[in-house]
Image (cartoon, rainbow, N blue to C red; front, top):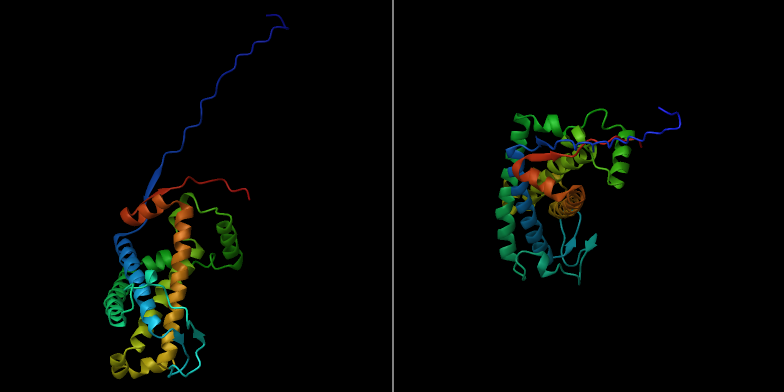
Length: 256
């Protein structure tokens, strides 16, 4: 063969095969049932609670609060619109019936979920932060990753990150129990049976204020939660909360 002869025998490389889709069992049945029951219950309670709040849209601290007292928060002249309340027209008695009926659902569902989670160790295994996760550097890293919309992939996507754990623990073990207890503290019948419950919160008006603050914090959590679901992929995220099965995003090599 002449040295000047060049043979260009190009071999086309086969395109890399896409990694097979991995389906993992992500959410147990008790978690899924409680999630959807709680979603319905919380929305009804928030909307009926806003109708109750419309009857006297002022908040106070202490034992007493009426028209001539000075509120720490007032919505005078700015009532909650009908589209955000149950019922949509002013009806305090109906709103209280809605609120009380779903309050029992919220309370019994919360107790059942807590007991089940402790028995099957869901709380200890999946919700309790690890020592590594509570390091400030780790928390700050997760905040930056979420701000950049870089959600966990691979094995990491099957576990709750520290931001999820802190928010879920805060809602399940702090906000919801506080809402139940402050709601009981505002009931005259419960005050007669358990007077120390009212003293625990510093009076009925303080209990009402804390109840409102917890409801506002819960609403903020719901809004952030829904935004994260939309950004992370609503079909996969919502589907996993219905069937329990989650399509695991392929792991990426993170050079950042």
